[in-house]
Amino acid sequence: MMTLEEAINHAREVAEKNRKCQEENTIILSNRWISSMCCAEEHEQLAEWLEELKELREKDRWIPVSERLPEHGKYVLISCEGFDAPSVAKYEEDDIGETFYLSEDMPCEDFGIVVEAWRPLPEPYKEQENG
Image (cartoon, rainbow, N blue to C red; front, side, top):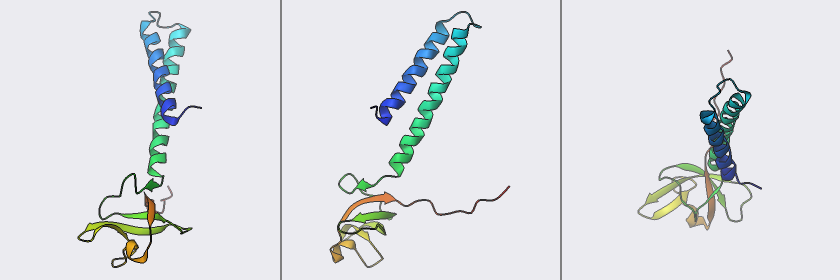
């Protein structure tokens, strides 16, 4: 089975091959030229959609703290050892060190809470205008 990255690369390769076939074909109105052009465009569109999917998956995944930490001052969702539900916390780098705060004066470490992973908060709800 292909990975998402392999599928993106494959779609781009097929698009490029069809563009080359299109460029090398001197009979402009041949079915092959039209087919190559359409195939190239469709595969390029597919590659763009797969790139968007890849970005959405990356944006919507849990990031282990061993992999990287959030930006200083950012509120994020945290997943903690021994807890079933995530919590919102603020990541700070201060004179104490680097830590997640459940509130201004509640660093997770002071309560024995071990943060295993984090993810960005979703965008807040915004009512759609009808029209």
